[in-house]
Structure formats: C-alpha cells, structure tokens
Image (cartoon, rainbow, N blue to C red):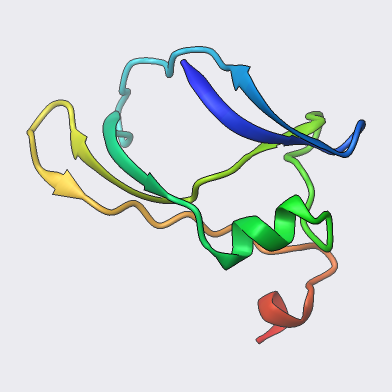
Length: 94
C-alpha cells in the first residue's frame, strides 16, 4: 500500500510503501479508505513546525482526514484521529 509520509530523520516528504493492515480483531474494525484529505495541519507538519512520528518510528504518514467503509458491515465512516503533542503545542493545549 502506498502512503505519503514525512521522514523526520531526513526532513523530507516521500511516497512510501507501508504494510497492509492486520485483519480486524475484537474491539477493532478494518476500514477501506475511499478518500483522504490534506489540510492545514498536514501542511504545517510538512514544514516540520511541530509534530513527530510515533515512538520507535522515523516517519509520520499524512492524511488524517478520511472517508472509508467498514469492511465487515459496509457502513461509511469518517474516522477521527487525534494524537496530541507531548509537550503540547499551542493547538493541543487548547
């Protein structure tokens, strides 16, 4: 699967291959993404003004605004992804 990601080690924006998601397990669902948006947050992240990848990673995949279908039910969903900065930036602090 392809994704656009920020490489914090090299301060670059790259199209990368990422592994397919694991099958859904109890308490989780698998969503087939139909559309992804890029917003001001993504643009600011791409300028390396704030944000960071998950622990143990050097890359952060962009496109947190999405529309998709739950594979097991066919329901359309808009997932909410929020992972605050630590320490919090001005936006996360609000």
